[in-house]
Length: 247
Image 1: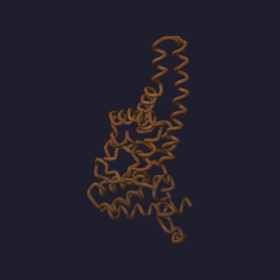
Image 2: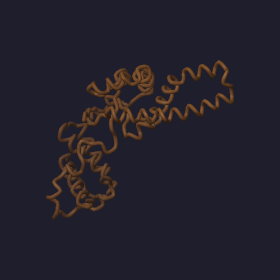
Image 3: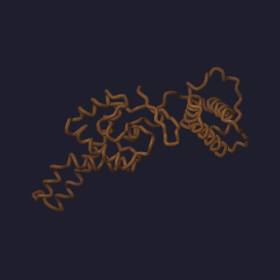
Image 4: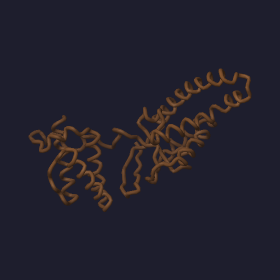
């Protein structure tokens, strides 16, 4: 598995797992199936409205593989926050490697160069670049400064890696309300702990403080902590409680 560290505009470094060729291939395949059915619907609409022999209809048919692929990809990734329908099924998304929000011009550049990466080269160029580059970038990604990452539960660790479960047999949970959180929430808390331990700077201290305040509110816990290290210890207690209560 390949990973990438992206530093956000708030100077917080987050590690992501890069999407592989397999996920991106199946996402593209699903998108192509969707585009085919959409095109068939448009085809019959144009046929009924303009007739098959019209010059406009002939140009539409000839240019379909190019313009429709660009339009579909740009529209989906713009409205679905860096995802097409295919990418959403594979739980992957487009992000900028510099941590900034992805812009419409970035997505347009990716969509335009998709023609070169896949259509004109039958997918060979895109597959080669994704397989061989450090950040798994196709030509469109390189030009736009983007890459594709896995989202959701694709993490470098899971809850069984967080603590030694065998040492918790006689442990009594302190915050039973932690059960209302999800496993994804707990993995995020663990991620914050790891990032703070690795990068002890003001930005990560702010993240720790914000998470602490959020958890206090959600769990309705009335404790007052002032130091980041005390908050980190509090997070670890929540993780222990969650494991004991949900295993």
